[in-house]
Length: 274
Image (cartoon, rainbow, N blue to C red; front, side):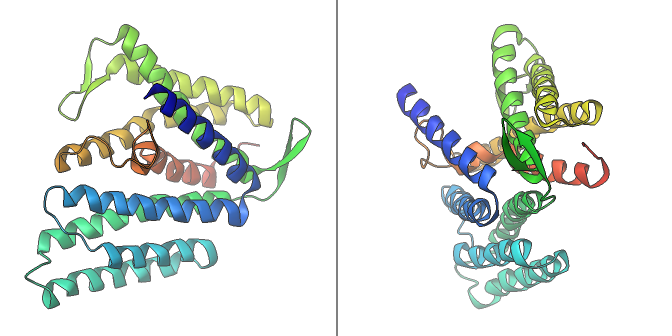
C-alpha cells in the first residue's frame, strides 16, 4: 500500500508540475477531466445509499459551466445554473417513479459543490499572464498563484498530520473526523504560513500579504477535508474512489483545494502580492 501511495504521489507531482507550469489548454483540460471524475465519484457515493442522482444531466451542466469559465463570462454561469435547476427538477415530473425530490436536491448540491469549485481553478489560471522569473525560467503569475494555493494546502495537511500525531489531545470535530485535533489544526495554519513565506521569497512577492494568505489557507483547508468527510460519512463510504492507488479518489485528493482555490482567487482580486 505504501509503495502504491508513493508511486501515485510521484506521478501526481510530475503531472501537476507540468500542467501548472504550462497553463492554458493543458491545465484547463486537466481541470475539466478532474471535475468530471469528481462528479462521477459524487454520484457513485450516493448510489451506495440507494440515491440515484442525475449523472448524465449533471455532467452536461458541469461541462457547460467549465466551458463558460474557459471561454465565456460569469453572467452565463448564472444562466446555466438556472437551466440546471429547471432540467433537474423537471426530471421529477417526467420520471417520478425513479427520480425523487431528495435526489434532485442532492444533484443540484453536487453540481454546485463541484462546479463552482473547479471553475475557479480555471479563473485563477487566467488571472494574470505577466511573468516572474524562477530559477532562470519564466512562470506566469497565475501559475505562481496556483502554486501558492496547492503548496499551501499541502503544507497545511502535512503539518496538521505530524503535529496532530505528536501533540494532538483535543478533538477538533470528532463526529465527522475523529482523527483531527485542535493541535493539528494549529500546526496546519503554521505550516501553510511558513511555506507561503518561503514562496514569497521565491516569487519575489510582498511578504506580509502572502503570509496573511498562508494563514487563511491554513484555516480553511481543513474545512474542505471536513466537508468531504461529512459526505463520505453520510453515504457510508471510506474513500470517494479508487482511481488514485493509495490515495483514494479525486475528491479525496482535491477536497481541500476545492475550498482553497476560490478563496485564493477572491483574495487576489483585492490584495496585491507583487
